Image (cartoon, rainbow, N blue to C red; front, side, top):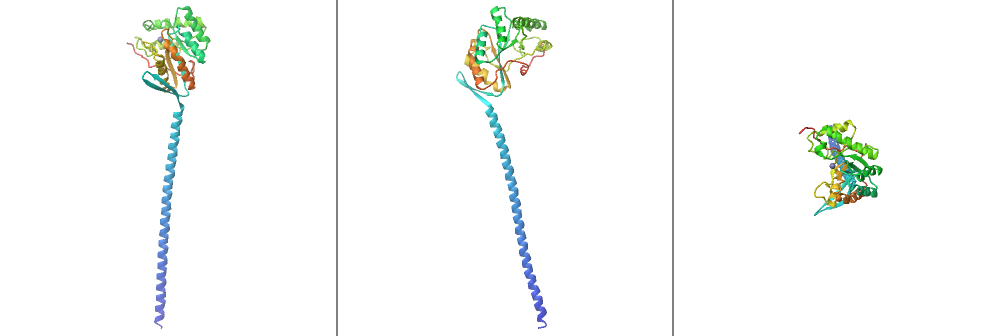
Length: 304
Ligand SMILES: [Zn+2]
């Protein structure tokens, strides 16, 4: 019994150790399970963050898509225009100004053009030349009185004379400015070089003539849209309409070149449809003033 006592104590302690070991092992595996759970939660959190960021980028993408759609919506469809066999589709951005400019008048068509502009309540820009015809000279005053921009385009419109020297150019300029002042009591609003400032006719650098205008504070304008009415034979009205409208969306301010010459009857014919298309798209038709953007061509600065 005496020997059995310590043995029993040892056995009890041994059993307790085993029980404790089992308990600790279980506890450890629980801790491991919890750690694993925490790991899962962390992973889930990461994927959740990933999910959120992908949703955010989707929202961003959606935002830019909405922006692109808005841009598209700001393009106003102003209809389609027949061009022989092919059909053009003109799209015009808004807002923008359009300047209708008529070169080389006055002519037997000036009155008709003025009547059409009046009918639609819009204003034009007339780059006029000199004339000895007293009836046609009355048109300068009518242009001013009806609120259009009267602009200068040389007296003679003869390239060989105007561009022969700076003196000849200045003389021609003075002659037209004197005539227009005498007829209307006002100075022209702007100048346009015959053939444009980018003409390849002048043997003297165009920059020399521009200096003359600069010294007098005269602004000159070219054009950025061509109606095509300068061609020979005369372009049909539907082609003039199409040419005038199809490129407008490329410019913040568009300056369309027309010609006011007695043989350009299709220009007169095309005008109402052009104005209607612009008005339907709420595009302002403007007169040249101090706020008009500088619309000038690249110029030749070298002598030939
Ligand atoms: Zn001209």
